Amino acid sequence: MLFDVRTAMFLAAFITLMLAVCLAATLNRQEPPVAGAVALWVRATALQPFAWLLLALRDYVPDVWSIVLGNALICFAYAEYPRALRLFTRGHAGSPLPHFVAGATLAPVAAFTWIWPSVAARTVATSLAILVLFALAVSALVRGTPRPLPRSHAITAAAFFVGALLLGVRAAFEGFTHTPLTSGTAVTPMQVLIFGYSALAPVLMTFGFVLMCNDRMRAELERLAATDPLTGVWNRRMLEQLVTSQLADARRHFRPVSALLIDADHFKLINDGFGHDVGDAALKALAADVRSHLRPGDLIGRLGGEEFLVVLAGAASAEAVAVAERLRESVAALAIDVHGIALKLSISIGVATLADTSHDFGALVRRADEAMYEAKRAGRNRVSLAMRPAGAVQAVTMAR
Image (tube, rainbow, N blue to C red; front, side, top):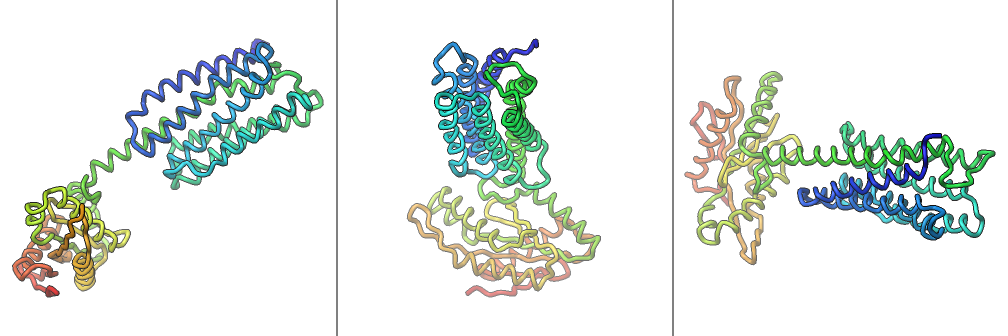
């Protein structure tokens, strides 16, 4: 046959070395936890050239190097893949199970090399170990990712799944064949299939992983473009888009929509007295507290400065006022400690409800803004409801 197993091993060593170098060059461009996942992937790829070189030097170096250390390195390299994928999808590398599986291959490989010499048995043992590692990689991708599975995740999972399938076929074939394998470099149809795939697998797997990193980076850029960098809530541009869509849906289904315009009272005194760092920490605490009291479908965004807008889909005036009052009480009870500085906040809230089909985002915000300023004029730490006609407001909650 034209296929040579040693050549395939040398090719796999060269490919994995190039992949490791290229991936290592991208590490400083990633943010946690992606950077950690890329580091594990680089480690997995960087171990493989040494493993493939040792395996290719079978009969030229001692068995302890070529067989035992070579197989151990390839297993420990593959053990890093599920850890990298779990870190990428779930934010942590998980249990040491992959390393345990890789380490468990040392004993059977050594035993089937010196105590009960058998190339076929050794092949079955390593094939089953790597199969388990590939299955763990697929599990990390499938179980750690929301449905539908992104295409990049599907490509990566498919590369590992095909590898696991081939290894299962190999283990079964070598375990039950009447012509057992007598050399690790023998050229048989099964060897051609396995080592041909072994040379291509790192490229396929890494291609899928790079696509996953690109998807994550694109999603992060989209998130940064849509959110306020300080508080993490929607910025004004994205909030307007979301609310406009929500208002259109409300008109179609004749459902109410209410807006709560929230402004921190006397916030300039905090910035002037303690500095903008303390003021920023106070705004972050305020936004987090308000967001913790909202329903999953509610929207919150920062309009600018210390002003936030909350939009409640399906909420009529009475319900919106009740929500606003809960928010006001929660913020008033909030204890904020910044570098040993104890802060107390209060908020004034203007409430406006979609009154007719002519109102858009701007009109809703203007009515809520008028109500908020009425709360300010009435003494702050209050909730005011914009009443019809626009411009008429009513203070419905007094300060406590």
